[in-house]
Length: 89
Image 1 (cartoon, rainbow, N blue to C red):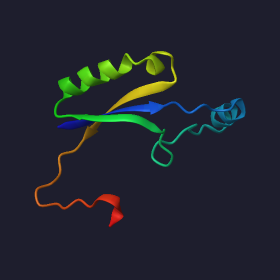
Image 2: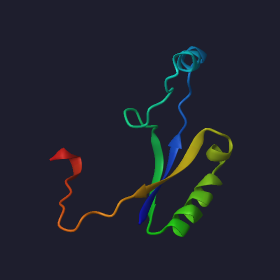
Image 3: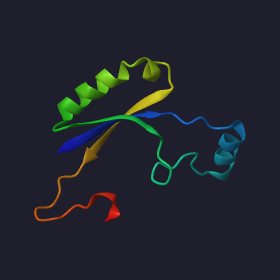
Image 4: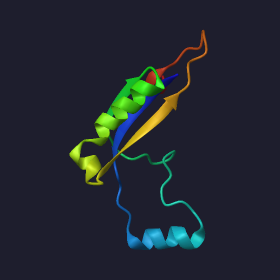
């Protein structure tokens, strides 16, 4: 299985937004509708390589300072014969 390793900026949230999310039982952030801005994206062919790359990206100063985060996302293998179109066309 392939993996994407993504370094993103952490969005700040206002105190009122945090309080509203806690009070309403909702989510503060929804990555499916408004993902965090990406700073760096790499891919790996297996889990061990992905974790090694994630560890390397986690040593970046902005990650250690809490301004960025590192995410490891599994990518499903495409079905044989399935066509992919980039950009929606």
